[in-house]
Image (cartoon, rainbow, N blue to C red; front, side, top):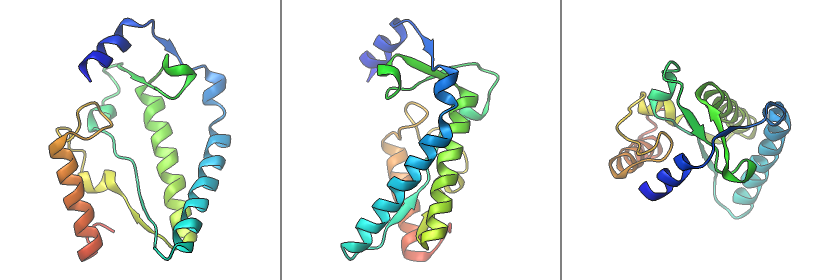
Length: 150
């Protein structure tokens, strides 16, 4: 992980083109279709889908730091977005998931709300460290077994 972080820092940083950011409605429509297909396929197999929103480390809410956020899947892995864009993107995708879950009558777990902005659960703002994975597992288990957090 540390080697990859260093390699990313050494690459020339470039922003995701604003034109690409403006395609968000198309991306959301595609995401919606994928979620609907997932729900349909899971139900067809005899199971009930559960959607879980993406959580981010709360330091991303501190927009004054100006840190950039690497977008590995965009532009061949060379592009970055600023924190405002990350919050916008993740928020919009989470909202789309919540809407599909409501329309499809699926369980939706609002993980960001369950985690209450705990920063020490992440190793890189998005991915959970070992403790974070355990906390998330415990919270999701509580929702599923006791109905907490819905």
